[in-house]
Length: 480
Image (cartoon, rainbow, N blue to C red; front, side):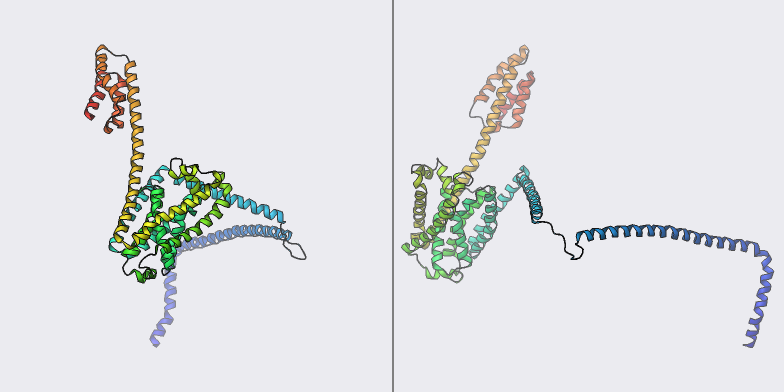
C-alpha cells in the first residue's frame, strides 16, 4: 500500500513532464479547436438571446391585445347591466313575440322545404319502381306466410295479423292524411279493426265483444272486398292494405273459431259460445254499429260539413254519391238531397245486418263453409286484380299499336312523295298495298308492335331505295 501511494505521488510529476514534452507538438492545433468550440457556444447563446427577445416582444404584444379586448368586453357587460341594482335589461313583450314568430316562420319554412324535397324524391320514377318492387315482394311473402301459418301453426295467425297491421295501418294514415283522404279512416272497417285488436290482446274473455267482432269481420269487412272492388295487386301497397284490412280479419277469426288448438285457453270467450244465438248476435253487432254510426254522424257529417261540401275533404258517403256508375250512387241520386244522409246510414245498417246472416247461421258452426267463404272472397280479389292488370296493360298495348299505325302511315306517305326510279316505283307498287293492309288491319299480331320493326319500316321507306323497300315487306312477312 505504501508503494502504491508513493507511486501515485510521483505520477503528477511524470504527467506534467510528459505534457510539457508533448505540449510543443500539439499546442497549436488544440488551441485552435478550443477556440472554435468556444466560438460555437458563444454563437448559440447569441441566437437564444435573439429568439428570447423576439418571442418576448410578441408575447407582450399579444397580452396588450388581450387586455384591450377584455376591457371592451367589460364595457359591453357594464352597458348590459344597470349599475346599482344589477338588473338585466329585458326586451319588451312585442320584441319577444316578433322574434319568436320570426324564428317559428323560419323553422316552418325549413320543414316545408325539407318535406317538399322528400316528396319529390319519393315520387321520382326510380323510387316508385323500387317501392313497387318492395311492395310486391312483401305482398307475395305475406300471402305465402299466411298460408303456411294456417296449415302448420294456426296459433300464430293472430300475431301475424297484428304485426302486419302495425306497419300497414300507420302507413295508410300517413298517406291518406297527405292526400286529404283521412276522413276515410273514420269508416266502419277501421273501427272494427280496432275492436278486433282490443278483443285479441285486452279482452279475450269477453263473449259479447267476440260475437260483435266475429259478425262484423265476416259481414261488413269481408263483403267490402266485393263492394269496394278490392284487388290483389301486389305492386300497389294501397290496394294491398285495403285487401289486408277486409280479408285478414275474417281469416283470423275463422282460425280462432275453428282451427286454433286449445282455443278456449287463449280465448276464454269461446267456452261460453259453443253456438251463436242469432237474435243476440245481430243485436250486439247492431249496437256496436249504432255507436260507430252516431260518432261518425256527429264528428264527420256535422262538425266537418263545410269542408266536405266545399270539396276540401272526401268521405265514403260523398265518394259513393258521386260515383254515378255504381249501384249505390245511382240509388242515392234518386233520393231527395235532405234525406240522402239518413237514407245512406239506414241502408248501411241494413247492409251490415244482411251480410252478417251467413256468419250467424252458417259459418260459425261449419269449418267447411268458412273455408269456402274465405276462398270465395279471395277469388273475387284475385279476379279484380287480374282485371286491373289486363286493363292497364291492354290500354298500354292499344296505345303502342296506335302509335305504330301512325308511324306506318307516315312512312307510307313519305315513301310516296320521295323521287324514285322506274324499278323503285315498281317495287313501291308491289309493297305499298301490303303496308296499307298492315296499317289498317285491326287484327295485327302483338309481335309486330316492336320498336325494331317500326324503326326498320320508317328507315327503309324514308330511304326510297329498292333494297330499303324490301326490308319492311320481308320483315312483315317474317313476323307473320
